[in-house]
Length: 171
Image (spheres, rainbow, N blue to C red):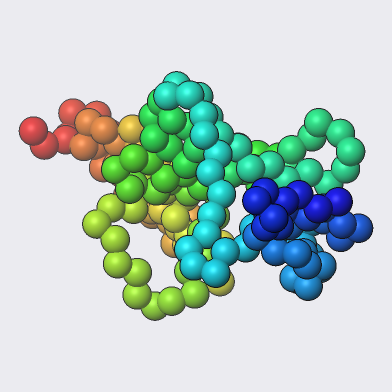
């Protein structure tokens, strides 16, 4: 099925998929040719929602309502978030550019530059599960083959113990 305006083809629907700006969507990668947008210059697609709404691109592995993967942009708080394996907010970027990772982060580089890094609950060593820093509510724990140091929000410090002495914090 071909759609023309003013004698110029604008869209085609064939056995491969839907093409906008191309008469042959089947000539694109077979993994991504169900819907092709083509332009000889800059091109793109817009998902427009209300000022307090969210726009979505969803990924599903069956003909049901389950959404395994999702890219969402929330207009009311200018936040983009990513869902994987059915779990929301695996990765979130807020309007100021701060990013929050909701899972484990594996770095394949020796140097990472960032003005701030937020960790959901644990920062650990890839090859040594017993070496990590845990971030609990009002407590930071450092471990090297067992908990070595704990600091709470009152600045109490414990070495090699999970029970902190009280009243020893500085002000």
